[in-house]
Image 1 (cartoon, rainbow, N blue to C red):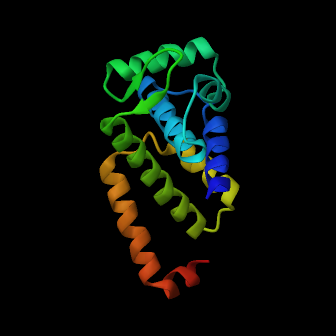
Image 2 (image 1 turned 60 degrees about the vertical axis):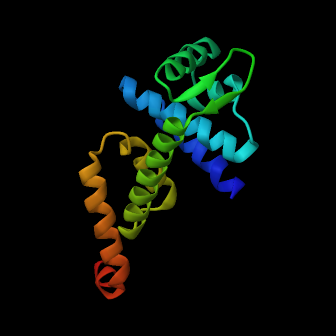
Length: 151
């Protein structure tokens, strides 16, 4: 499980190098914080900086913004704790990623590319699209012969 978390953090790091909107950047921060807490039991600005490829002052600025918006509780030189709102959003992002990853792998795309692509688009999909994609993945899993005939 820890290996998966570390791999996930690396994929977030790679995807963060592309152009992002403010909202998707905020989601990336919440995602990394959540993954770090799951992996290490805590998150700090240095680790966040490393995984998102941004400077420590940039991390501090975003953490203050996320705190102001109610996604986390942040005190400089103290711990970073996601609020219920922050955990909920991080969980939603994780679910989107999982659905996209599973779908891409069903298409026969190798894991690394599927993971990278999922990370790149997970922030940009409408919830309705994800809902339908989840239904489609469930349908394909329930009809393995259909999936086999595609592959």
